[in-house]
Image (cartoon, rainbow, N blue to C red; front, side):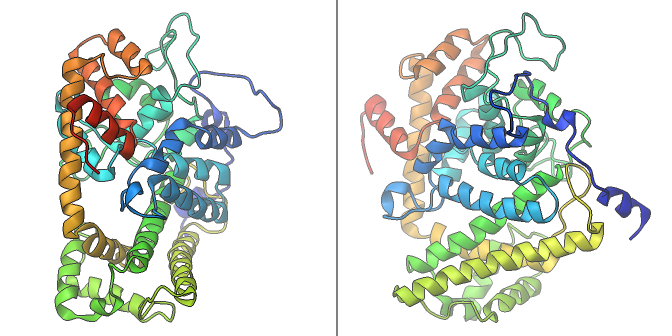
Length: 435
């Protein structure tokens, strides 16, 4: 190991800066760590509960046992907690980042995100990850700033909600994309970013002293745990629902189409690499050859998912330890190392879920209708506001300093809806209900 790797792998305890909150507050009950308090705040938040009614792959009302954004977040948190702990992270901190990472997703999943981005063009756009930071630091009512006046440009202003008032390290652990719109470090055209312009004060505070545009170690663990959780579980759901035929993955024509989809997740991979990744998975003893819905088949499917999660996490743990050694890895002491072959296997699994579950004709028709609902809600609420806004957003609308801030409030209101409440509000305001 070279000197740089040895230095990065040295134990780094979480310091006062990592445990600081934007607005200082005393402990209500001694004995809990700062990160245990963070975890409890996210777990008990209305924003997290709302994810139980928000689409993951299949809409919540269209399946008896759906995976929602909430169940996905819980699964991601379980994966992240164990992987983070194995590498020396505080497990409560990593779990908090995982629980919070999708908290900003709007109704109808990525379809709603795309529709809201169009509706929010005049106020800077919409992105689920940036909305997550906004919820955690502003929209989820838990703490208010009590300062008589800002002490610096990083400070909140009097009477302003500071959301859950999480620690700096917890907010950082939930930040997948630590940059503003258009500032992606390698791809300026990327639609992914983590903060809106009017949330920059708290973003600058949480990123103080951090390497520019670099995710903290806990966020890289969260990011990989997210990929592992949804790639494996979405394929599990597709197999159980009968949308995925394991035999089809061996047909040349199907494989060619599948690899086209996989390119969006691994744009630098050659088809031969993707084929090798799929073949490695198909060769595993735990890979299902068929699925008939029996108890034995269901047990086999659960083992399939568990084996995949173990495969992906163990590979990342071993590769990270090989680079950085046995020390405690926290904050900016390291970056999670995921072997390329494993990343490609995960990319192929994502492509399987997209091709056979998300790209079905009925799903495409449903998404088209969902886009209309979001667009019409945005139009009607913008025209009628503050009518139709919940009291908290109506008050924010009255306090808006300009049209951009007023529109952002309307977007915030829509983004906090569940799938069902979006449909109900649309039926109420627009006058057409559908399911």
